[in-house]
Length: 407
Ligand code: NCD
Ligand code: ZN
Image 1 (tube, rainbow, N blue to C red):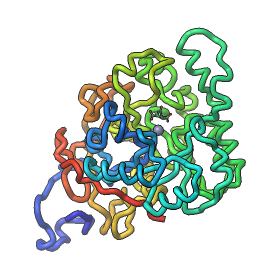
Image 2 (spheres, rainbow, N blue to C red; image 1 turned 180 degrees about the vertical axis):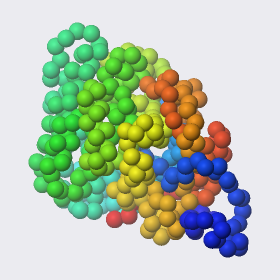
Image 3 (tube, rainbow, N blue to C red; image 1 turned 30 degrees about the vertical axis):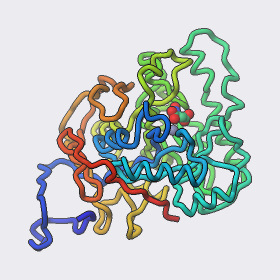
């Protein structure tokens, strides 16, 4: 059985509907599988950092059952051919169901083809491609995901010595504000999705609009700030950078009140050799797919976020925004009869310490090292298959299915 057929008391269910294994969760919490629409599994071409199997292994260990992979692989996902190639890789290696983002390319013809093939969204990296694409294109069926850092502002204000200050000044929050302003000022008719917001001012800007706009926050921008960058160095280097405690507070408020739609990890693994290069040279990115649910659940445990918002922002909303549904059109991330049996059980009473060496992806380091969290995922199901149980990944490579975006 790969779908949820009934929710309710066992005593109300006729015996012939109970088949196979019965699992007593002993009073722990059962969530819909977490949907993470922003991951970099690095496959193909950058598999020294991660691949679809190792990335999805980390996902299921963290209670994540659906992901959407970003297009900055080698080759990049910038054509139907490359898209199909990546889809094959995912189908062969993934433990979790997956969607695929593509680069925001100029060819409208290729974009149409990618749209028909079920692409999740088109990603705009303003540092790589010309954002006038967004300013001109109007297709209500397309989602354009934006990395909001305006290259014209990056590197503008650097005036002090020392790597730490230089790095932060080289990527100021003004770059985010400027890019968001620029995009909002355009007449694009497509659904705009702003990735990994970091600043209170961004929320104010987006809040004023009544266009179809959604946005996300990462666990690291919610829970870490520049003090952690100082402590952890390159391991905590990411684009956009970690900001201040004040920004964190505003992001948390935005997440609770729904101004920020979803949590997405921006799982961006790099090798330890690359991260040893020093703050300015090391590549940006934090591997966070496995720690996301426990970190956000800990906010619930501390009374800083409602359980309702956790489930909405991590499960159902990302599925609805990106059109991730099962074969009957029922969204992922939902605990409903007819939904795929994507489930995660969390031992909410367990307090434990995050340790990089225990992670299931290729990256064995984290800027959350040593943080005590509440709630440990101990059972993960993808379409009824147990893919993670009691600390062990039990799923089979290739269990994951491609999910074409539903319009
Ligand atoms: C991303 C990566 O490593 O792929 N890194 C990051 O810091 N978020 C790329 C990027 O978004 O710049
Ligand atoms: Zn990213």
